[in-house]
Structure formats: C-alpha cells, structure tokens
Image 1 (spheres, rainbow, N blue to C red):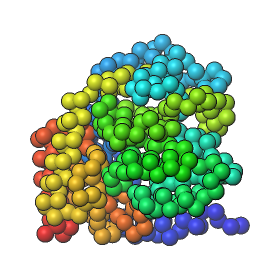
Image 2 (cartoon, rainbow, N blue to C red; image 1 turned 30 degrees about the vertical axis):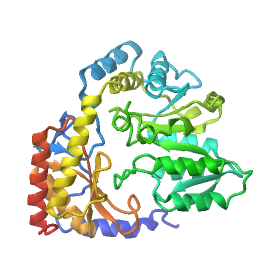
Image 3 (cartoon, one colour; image 1 turned 90 degrees about the vertical axis):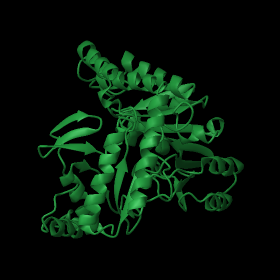
Length: 400
C-alpha cells in the first residue's frame, strides 16, 4: 500500500537534520501567557513580541474585551450554524454595519476567517471561462481561491505594472477578468503600485479585488488601506480583509459598492457551508473596527516605530526586503535556513520573538526573519529590539 505521506519525506529529513543540531523548532513555539500586545511569557521568560501582525495593538483594548465578555454572557459560546441558517445573530449584522461605516461602502459580508474571505470571493466571482490575473507573489489563500473557482489563472511579475498590462492585453476582450492585488505583501512588507495597476486593469475592462489584510488600520486617511492612500477607492470593485491583523481577533470580510453584491450570500460556498463566527468574536471585531476609525495617534506611532527599526537594522548591516520602511513588516534576508534559525534562536534567547519564513511561503531560495511592528511597542522597546538584533547578529556572524 502506498504511503500518501511519503511525498513529504525530504521535508521531514530536512527538519530532523536541523533539529539534530540542537536548535529549537521555530514553528512550535508556545505562548505560556500573553501579557500585552507586545509581551508574552515563552519558556518562562518575558519576551518582546515582534512577529504577531497585531499592528494596532487591539487585542487587550479594554472596550474590545468588555464587548466580547458581554456577548459571551448574552449569546453563548457559538452559533452552531451557517450564516444562511441559524448562524446570523444581531452581532454579525452589527459587525457588517461597522465595516460599511469604516469603509464607506454599501455592502459588507463577514466570513469565518480571512483565508475563507479570499477563498470564497475569488472562487465565486471568477469561474470556468473567466480569467484571474494575479501577482506571482500572491498569498496562498488567493491561489487557493483561484483553484477552487476553476478559472484560467494568469500570473504577472511581482509588482510589475508593465507585465500586468502586457498579460491583460493578450486576453480575449469579451472574457470576464478579475485582477487580484494586495495592498501590502506579507513576506517582504512591500506595497503594490495600486494607482498604476488599477488604471491598467480598468483600461482592459477587468474588475479589481484588493486584499488589504496587511494595510487595514494604518494606511490612508481613515486607515482603510493602501487603496485609500493611492486614491483608487472609486475604481476598486471589492476589498477583502481580515480581523486577525489590525482588528485583533479572527475572521474575514469583503466590502463593495457593487449593486448585485448581496447575491453572494447565496452562492459563495465558503460562506454558505461553514459555521458563523462566535458572538463574542464579532462583538470584539465590531468594537475594534469602530475604535480604529479614530486611531490617528496610534497610526503615527506605528509608522515612527517602523522607520526607526528599519533604519537601525540597515545601519547595522542587515539585508532587508525593502530599501525603506514601506509598511509595518520588515523582512531580514538570510542566506539559508540554518542561518535563519540560528539568528531566530539567538533573538529568542535574548528575549525577542520574530517569525522565520522559508519557501514555499517565500520566493524560491529565500529565507528570512519577518518582523511585524505594533502601535503599542514603546520607544524603549524598539531600542531594546535593535540591541538584541545587534548582539544576536554578531554572535551568529550574520553582521560584522
């Protein structure tokens, strides 16, 4: 009998060889206790968190926690049903109302995860005979949405307006076309040239979906994302996002002004055939979203943190994913997995948690440590982080 897991033997061998050197498993960290948006107890040690996507630090906001507790008391622990059956509570509608107010749109739909939001929207919008045109570095959930929907997939070079234009130009003029873009790319922390890409997409008659998972909360005047900052709100047809980054809980959504949008509640399989979010989750999300409407000071502090850390790491001699701080994500590029894990462990032992990333999450042959800053990181913590990177980088030979 064939072993269906044997295809993973090379990965198993690679992982076992790495762990045999005495390093810890970077993908098996346990948070023993979370103290705040920026600190946790790991292995009995107080550790600064620099790998959580908790951009706006909403996870411990008193109003957010109070809303969740109240909903838990009043509505119980879960819905045990789909949104189209018994799974729509008052809190789900209130959450969608908060999204509509935040984005200034006519419609909003909430999914159980951000992954499902991309899976559901992309697979439902573009089907057999349609074309999905996407950035080669798109998130796994975007690719999975393409495959589920059975549309023709056309990739263009990462962030290349010219290649997007060329590939759109080769497609049949009468065919349905969906261009999928991301405001912020989660591995390198770089942003898309949305103004130019949206213009090219419209020229070729394509509809546009922008994933703002990593841009919501701190890009644009209202914190709506890179598409707002780029001034293309009126030209983007669908915006997908998540509650698991700046909003500080879990869930996904799509907002739109399309007049036929509500029909998606009847035809979108990842929406129809899964249980809805627990009442406590949508209550925390709605409260957080409404507070993010008035978070200008937090946004400014997050940008200050990002620029300070980026410049400090560059000055030390680290190779980074972007020339300047483009978002709250800073990628530290390493030569191989062994070097990445050695630096990661050195930082953890110093009291700093970051993410390790490797293919297929990163482009082929690229290994990196990914830092994601939080608006609640203090100036002192940022200086501590820089000191840890300096000592661990020297100890591992990553920097001179």
